[in-house]
Length: 279
Image (cartoon, rainbow, N blue to C red; front, top):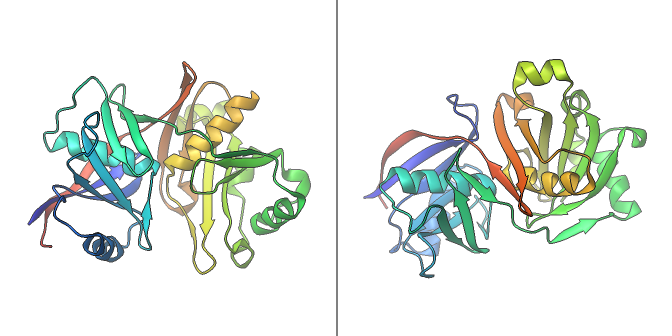
């Protein structure tokens, strides 16, 4: 039996964040066992914690979706660090150092768990054909697009600035047109709604793989990519809070801070289920 936790990430309020399944002490599990369990949980990601192979790291994590393994993802990073610490993990230094497929990731512990966003692997303009596909998939008018660019830190995100938060909420995507797109959209709240929601912007993240389409509840990688893009262009301030998931019954909060040349993505994480897995 292996220790198991299910963690709600990016929300301190029960059931409003993005759930993550975490299995501890998995050094003896095979790839097939990990893949089978991740498929069975049917969550967007399941992580498996084990001893690190790099002496600089505090633990190693492998991140699996229902269809394969990822080198890095945002909410699994925060959720895994939370689970490891809660289970008694003691970092070598002030921050937690996570080893994953993308290398070593620094996770700071205060004021809440947060990771330094990995560099964008692709940025800049998209070609005209792709832009047209995205406009069609989002079912918005071309004139509604404030800005649109590659903001890819691994998963393949294209970022779309729709100006206002209400424009983001009003998006009704054309699911059939999404094909293999991964699109993160963002818009700003006015001052009255900032005070009401405790959030400066609204974010939604849509993804498809040619067969399945989904909207992610709260997305660390997409928020990281949007922040790197829009803080970089001066379109967003160095510090802000994003709300995500409201259209699909969630209410996550992602805290963004650009400092010392890095963009930090932070959020709450709370264990909701704790037990063991018979593998």
